[in-house]
Image 1 (tube, rainbow, N blue to C red):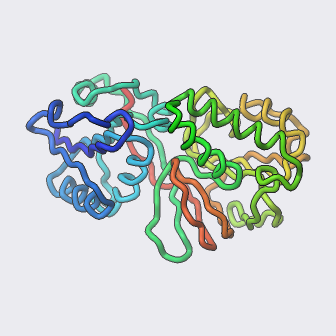
Image 2 (cartoon, rainbow, N blue to C red):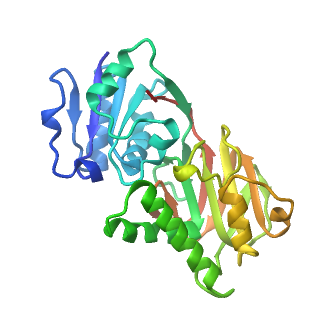
Length: 305
């Protein structure tokens, strides 16, 4: 099995640690410093027939690799293994990848007849202005952008992984609950949304989220029961009965009053979003600059254990 490793030395768990000490001589190891360098490395991996692609980094590194994967490997992507070394590692949590997994453990697992391979399709986010399409697993607008910016402050205080998620959720909830209708949390953002070519009423949104993951950190289930496909959560602004709604939504429960008060869950193939607001994809904030398409991408194979 030909193995290629993309190592991000800037990822949280990799700071101050050299990959040279643990990468076998027969493994192709790269440390691309730019998106352009990453594309060159992935094209070289494909030319050399890499069958197992190991991503040593966090969710942002995974996003960047998967976004460039089709250009390098076309319709025949390799098996992907994760060495979760980021601050949150939501994809690794979803797949059940053991924390602290080493390259040697990933290689042993990949070569084992009992290897567990799971399939996940990322989101594909395409800008109307022609910027390169990005692939990721968690998309969000509105309060999700504010919560993401808050999480960066939480990380700077030394909280990571589940603790980071817990503090961010708590802080975002407190900010939204304590403000009035015109508070910057509760006022929401203006956008136009269509789901599977069905226009939704134009209105300010407190929150719009989408994911293809089944499991989220801390067992949170804002999209409802775990299931395949592209799942969405769409919340009007200002949010009504937010405290009661949070209790139901985050536990994965349901209540007949949720849709009536502007809390909508669902499944979709494609979302069309028109907005001038920023959005988040796997922990990074991007400028929407007009129009976006969020669609279900091609299914990839991941080594779980």
